[in-house]
Amino acid sequence: MVRADLKDLLKAVNRAQADGVIDEYALGGTLGAMFYLEPTTVPDAEIFVKLPRDSAGSVPSVSPIYEYFASRGDVVEGDVVTIASWPTKFLSLASDLVHEGFNESVPKEVDGVKTWVMTPEHLVGIALQSGRPQDLALASQVLDSEVVDRNKLHLMLHRFGLGPQWHQFSSKYLEARN
Image (cartoon, rainbow, N blue to C red; front, side, top):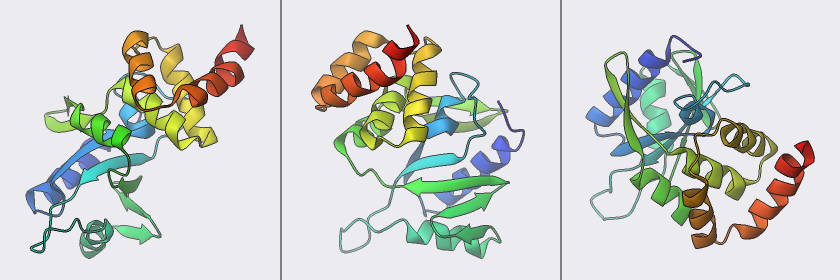
């Protein structure tokens, strides 16, 4: 792991879960990738959350999560809260792919603290779906590490209609190196 204070971040998120602010969560982005490889960039924390439903049955926004951490003394700036020195974003399950990645996340442990991490295939798929340059660079790094089951990845990309994104990504990031 890149940062020693990861355990403190996870303890804080698990505490928010125990307090009912978060129903369930899974680590994604660079933070999730840390469980499979050593990222070349200093990670921020992207935490995908399933939120508890309110009494009317509607899904609330992530705002109460930020309010919770602010009330505990963590610094909130826009959509980032710094928890145990980690710049952290809480993200809802905004697409079917993210929802599947969340549901297929795997349990991991950091110094006895339990957490859930998206699979490397879902990290790549979500990066392609977002299309942000930093996410595409992460996808390239995850693919280079050979932790991805390419068959599983290609089936998932096909299932979610990400073939065009894969071809564009492949020609820009993968074929250019050969």
